[in-house]
Image (cartoon, helix red, strand yellow):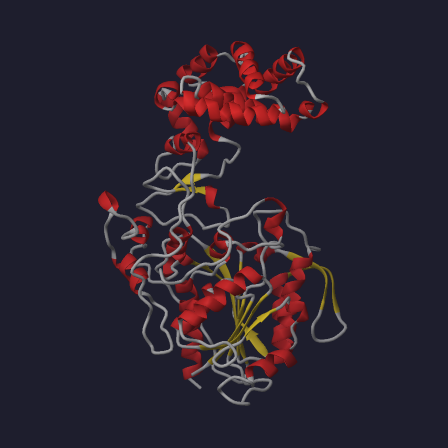
Length: 516
C-alpha cells in the first residue's frame, strides 16, 4: 500500500480523503493540542495505533526535521524501510492567514514562512509526489526577499508564491503542473469552496493529473446534506445523508464506521432578540437583501418582532441615553467614576432595554433588576427605583413613533439597519436548494435554512463531507485573544480540506503510482 505524509494536518480533513483513496498515512503533524485530540481520536476510531500504524507529531513545522520524520516512520510496523526518496507523497496546506484575501495580507507575515518550511521538508524527504493546497489568495500573493531552501540564494524583491514554488521544485528535480483552482462543489460536496491545488511529480516517476469534475452530475445541495439529522417534520433522507451516516472512510478492517446518532449536534442557545433577528432573513439572503426586502414589504417590526424592536430602539438611542443614565445615577448618589466609561454605559443601556421588554413580566423583571443592582453596586430597591425614575425619560432622540415611521416609509438609516441586523454584513441564511457558501471558522456567519439559529458543528461537518462518526473534540468555540491560540471545534471544521475533495486529489496520485 502506498505511503503518505500529511503536514499541517489539522483535524484531519485531508487525511480522511487520503485514507479513502487507499493510502497508509505514516506520519502527520500539527502544532495545535486541540487538533491533536480530534485527529488522534479519529485514527483510534479507525483502528490505527499511534506508534504502530502511524505517527502523529505535535510540533511546529519549524522544529520538524527529516531525521525526526524518518526516525518516527522507521519505528512503525512496516520496518526500517524508509529513506530519502522512498515516501510516495507528501500532502500539506500551510496555514493560509497570510495569503487570504479575507484579512490583512502581508508579504512579511511570519506565517508565510511556513511555506518555506514545507519546501524544506520536501527537499529533505524527496517524496515521489507533492500535493499542496491553499486559498485562492496565494495565486497573487508575493513574498519579499524569500530565502531559497536549496542554498543561500534569496529571491530579491517581490516574487509570486507560485513562481518561487516552481523554481524550487524544478531545481529539486520535480515537474510542477500548471496550477488549478478546484471547486469542492464539483466533487460531490454541498459547498462552494475554491481551493488552489499544486501538484508536482518527481521526474523519475509517472506523471500526475488533476482530478476532473463531471459537470453533468447535479450539485449536492444543502438540503441533501442536512437530511436525517432531525426528527419530526424535518426528518428525511438523501443519498448524501445516508452515506454520511453509514460512513465513507474505511477502518483497518476495510469497513466504514456507521453513526447511529450524529455527533457534535449541540445547538447554540439564542435569546429572543437573536432568533427574531435571524427570522428576518429568508433563504439565500444576506443582510443587504434582507434590508431591501423588509423596507419594500414594510415589515411590522413592533408587531411581529417586539423584542427586536425594543432592543433596536435602545441601540439607536444609545448615545442619547448615556447622559440621562449618568444624571439619574447622580440624583440617587450612585454615580462612580468607572460608570462613566463608554463600555459600561453601553451595557447598562442594553440592560435597560431588557427591562423595557419585560416590564410586565414580574419574574423575569426581578432577575434583570438583580443583575442591574450588581452593575450599579446598589441594593435591589435602589435598582428598582433607578428603573422607575428613568424609564420614561429614555429614547427621546429617536422616539418609538419616529422609528415606526422609518420602518413604514421604508427609509432605514445605516444606523437603524445596524441596530436591527448588527454590524455583521456577511451573515447569510443558507438556501436549501443550492450549495452552501464556503464554510468559515465562525458559527454565526450562517443561519440555518430551516431554523432560526446558527449551524451546529455537525451541520458544518456535513457541508464539508465529513462522516457522522468523525467526532470533533475540544471546546466548541472561543473568542477574543484566544482565537489566535486555540483551535476549537468550529475552527477545526472551517479550516479543514473537505474529505471528498481530498479523496479526488489523492486518487489521482494513486493512479500515477499504479502506473509505475
